[in-house]
Image 1 (cartoon, rainbow, N blue to C red):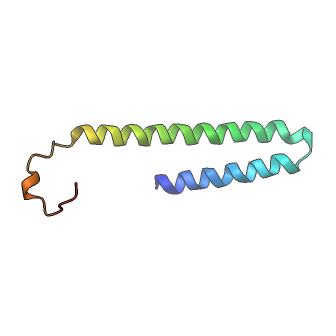
Image 2 (image 1 turned 120 degrees about the vertical axis):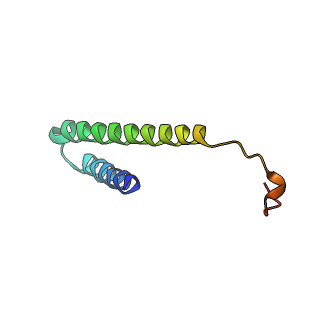
Image 3 (image 1 turned 30 degrees about the vertical axis):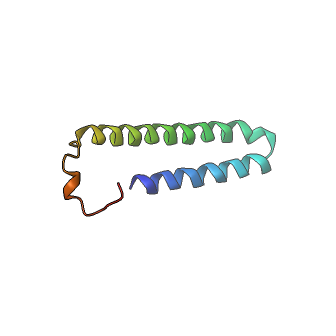
Length: 74
């Protein structure tokens, strides 16, 4: 779900940037504001995702039995 949302926001951001280049100057402020809002959402969710991954890595137990591992390349 998160990746889908991120993809949607990236697509919206790209569309807004294209509109910003082709639209008259009068509407540029509104488009720039929406681009900033979308970027803030992207950064916020990316930060949450990064923190969740870091927290999950703290909960993992250290690997204590490498001699039982089938994979010879670690």
